[in-house]
Amino acid sequence: MDHAQKWITASKAPPLNENTVHLWRMGLDLPRKEIADLRKILSEKENSRANRFHFPEAGEAFIVTHAVLRRILADYTGLQPAEIKFNYGPHGKPGLDLAGGPCPVQFNLSHSGRMALWGFTRERRIGVDVERLRDNYAGSRIEKRIFSEKELREFNRLPSKSKNAFLFHRWTGKEAYLKATGRGLSFPPAEVELPLKFTGGGEPIILPDPGSKGGAWSLLGLDLGDAYAGALAVEDRCRSINFFIYDFKSLVSG
Image (cartoon, rainbow, N blue to C red; front, top):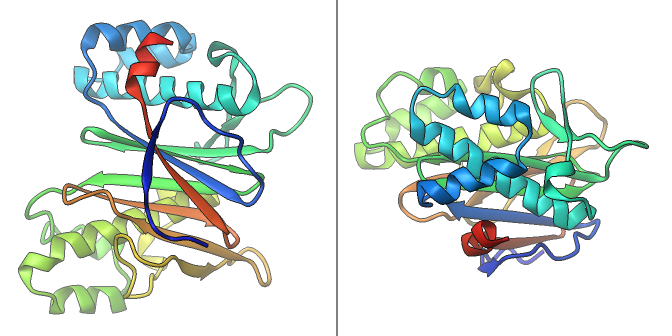
C-alpha cells in the first residue's frame, strides 16, 4: 500500500472499490448565508439538532459536516442527498439505512476546531477522528484516563514541548479505533494500548481484533499540519487509501 498522504482537491467522489479507503477533509470556514442554504438537504431531525447547540459555531459545523456527508454518500449510492437515511448502533455510531437490506458503504466522520474529516469503505468498519491541538493541554490529568500504564510512563519521560503532540496523536488514534469498532468511548481508552511508535503520519500499525480469531485493524496517524492531529482505523489490512480535500465551492453551488 502506498502510505504517502497526498491530498487531492475534488468535488465529486470517484468509485469506491472494495479494497480502498476514501478519506476526505475540509475546512469549515464558510459564510453563514451559505451554511444556512445547506439546511435544505438535512433531515428535520438533523436541523433540530443543529438548533440545539449553545454556540452558533458548533451548530454551523454540524450543518456543514452532515451536508458534506450526504453529498459524498449521494455520489457513492446514486441517491439524492436529501433522500439518504441513517440508522444508529447501540453506542450511537451512524450507518446508512437502505430499504432492501444492508448497505455496503461504511462511513465515519469527525470535526474539531475548523477542520472536518470523513472516511468511507465498502463492507469494512471504519472510524476517523480529528482534534485541534490545544497548547498546554498535557498536564490537565486527561492523560490518566487515556493512557495505559506503559504509555503514561513514556509520556512522563518526554520533554514538556513534546507532550501535547504525543497526547493528541494517541487520543485520536484510540478514538478512531473505538469508533470503528462501534464501542466509542463507552470502552475505556486506557485499555487500548498503542505501540509507542504510533505518531501522526508514517506507516500504519496493525492492532489485533479482540472480537475474532486472527482478525486485525489498520490504524494510521494522519498528517494534518501543525494545528491538528488525526487518525484513521479500518477493519482488516487496507491496501489503498485515497486522500481528498472536499471542494467547498461545489458544496454551496450544487
